[in-house]
Image (cartoon, rainbow, N blue to C red; front, side, top):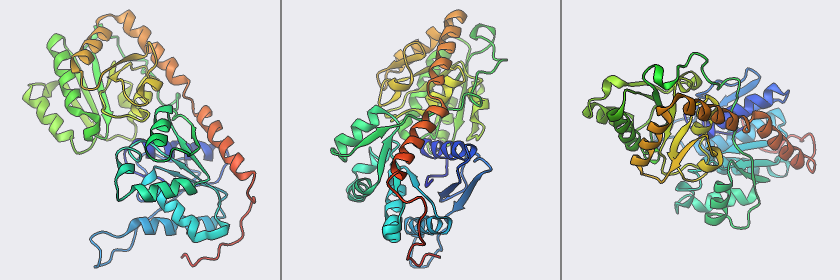
Length: 374
């Protein structure tokens, strides 16, 4: 696995997939620029890339270092296959490593996750290299039909893209048995993200302010990012600081999500919506934007999706969910059943079938690659 290490969907999916593969007896190596935010299975070997600084560079050229490390790990451990998550720079670095390894390079898979298509993939400085990497990949996957369509429309119209949906561990993410229904205490609205502009954090604040004007409620903000401080300041301006809990980024995010009664996800773009899926698994109905891959995740009866930016409709939907315990409980149970369809087994079967197809035309073991990697 070659992937981002910090908070975000692509790194989370890569970590969870690596751990699942290791649990099923595969030898897995995880190559990354930093220690993974979420805990990896003990059976996964982590290779952290730390480029050597040089006075010539404002920052070390770590994409080159990443490519070199991919090639070195592949050669040293005789890897059968490489799976790169996120197009930039991980898929590009993997293609560079394949070029370095030459004819001895194993097949490699590129999984696109969303922002690597739009907006990053369309940037003039990135687009040609991403297109080249995807054209050279042995296989390309996307987590939703929406992202597959966007990839074909914007970057590679003739590419063969397989959809393998993201997944959630239903044993780890599950409803809190001690959670009270909305009528028995202040209900909790929860938002979990990396607090980037695309998540429309101001809309989260506005929705909560409208809900709070109608009834007692609490807001739980899980995660960290550039707009977190602004959100807290705006909540303070509304006089709502006392109703807000903001623990920051948490590796055990399930412990926090399971306290929620409604999850707010008013994003401008979502290629899949992993935060939505993890909320559903915790029995937390989702109120958010009808955009991107979210309708593929939040099915009928598991929440309410509205137009992007329609905070009035979102507040109305949240209030309706919280108004009646029986209705909320039914929606919560539907949310959990919906999440169950995105099981780790489903994703693991999809990926391992793809791996086996690729390996069926490749030698099982590689000869040492003729390169001078350290």
